[in-house]
Amino acid sequence: MAKFSLFGHNQPARLAEADSVVVIGLGRFGSSLALELMASGTEVLGIDGDEEIVQAHNRLLTHVVRADSTKEETLRQLSVPEFSSAVVAIGGDIQANILTASLLLKLGIPNIWAKAVSDPHGEILRQIGVSHVIYPEKDMGKRVAHLVRGVMQDYIEIDENFALVKTSPPKEIIGVPLGQSSVRTIHGVTVTAFHRPGDGWSYTTLDTRLEADDVILIAGDVRKVEAFSRLT
Image (tube, rainbow, N blue to C red; front, side):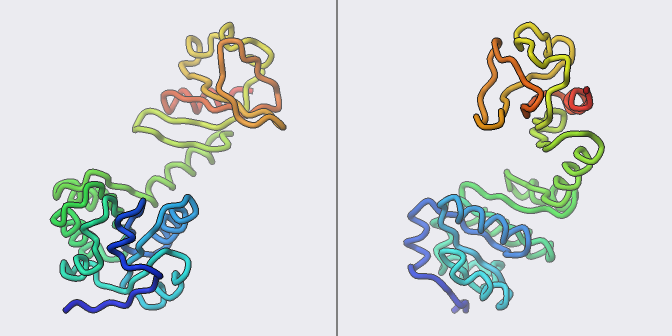
C-alpha cells in the first residue's frame, strides 16, 4: 500500500471532477504556478515529497499531499488519472521528473506540462510523448535579456521569431491615425492595443491616434519589435 499524507477538505476524486489541475513539485516554480491557478479560481492538488514544503502549502491549495510521484500506485490512490491536466514542476531531480511524466502518460492524462532544466532534458520529455515542455529559467533569462537590452516595458516571445512587446509610442506615430502611419509597411510591426491613463486598455483601429503618455502593445518579428521599441 502506498503511503502519503493528505491535507484538504475533500477527497481528490471529487476534486478531479471539477475545473482542477494536479501540480507535482512545489518548488519555486511549482508553488508560484499552483498559487496563481488558485487565485484564478482553479482548484489544485499539489504533490511534493518534502514534508516542510507540504506543510507550508497547507490551506493555500485545495489539497496538498506529501507523496512519491514516481510510484504508480500512489498516483492512482490520489485519483490523479481522473485529472485532465497535470504539471510536472520537479526541477531538482531529473530522473523523478522524467519518470513522473512517463507515469502520467501511462495513466492517460490528456494535458501534461513538464518543466525541463536543459535542452537535452526537454528532448527526452518530448521523445516519451510530453506535448508541452516548458523552460521557466531559460525563458525568463531570455525575457530579461531583451528587456535589459532595449527600452521595452515587457516582452513576451510567442514563438522563436515572433514577440509581443509593451512599450511607449515613438514620436513619429503620435497624433497620426494608425491607418496613415504606415507602421507595418515601414517597420514591419503591428500596433495591436494601447493603454491610456484613466481609460485602460483598448484595441487599436485604423483611426486610433496615439498620445505621448500612452503605452502600446506591438507584435512582430523579434528584431523588428526591438528596433521599433528603441525609436524615440
